Image 1 (cartoon, rainbow, N blue to C red):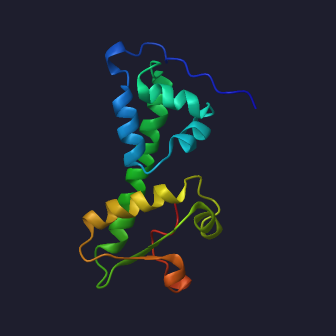
Image 2 (image 1 turned 120 degrees about the horizontal axis):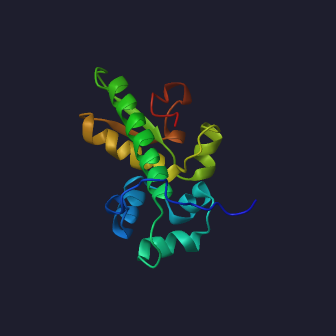
Image 3 (image 1 turned 60 degrees about the horizontal axis):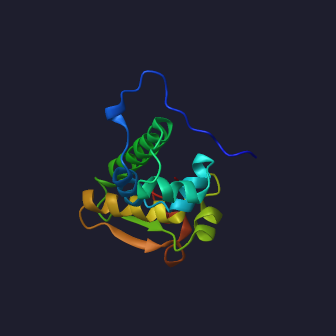
Amino acid sequence: MPPTTYTDPPGMPEDDRMTAAELKVVREYLGLTGDWLAAHLGVSPRTVRHWEAGKYAIPDGVRLAVEDLEQRTAQFVAGVVEKLMDLPDPGVVTYRDDAEYHAAVPESEFPASWHRAVIARVAQEVPALAIAYADQVDRAAAGPARRG
């Protein structure tokens, strides 16, 4: 598969361009590696490293794709928080690695590191949230944060 070429959408103002620091901060906040983001965007990991180092300008198409990841993640977090808020003993599972996560949630495109970052955000919103690895709880009681 040929690499994806990102071009600026017509009419995007130059001052809306994502900075190298913004890209790295958002990627890390989402719990994503540079390699995962590169694969998701269809570019080489080296390209992502160059964007984050400020060597290359980040095309607005990439900014829009990253904003989409942010929005989808925020929606997932909000949905999990909503399901947990009224439970007397809220709890969620998370996963040690990608193999474990994708075995449990094969439809998810995201890595286990994303799921752990999501759970950290949920824990900020849900008082007394219990967090365990999937193999430490009954799979039937996996809770609403299992899917992602």
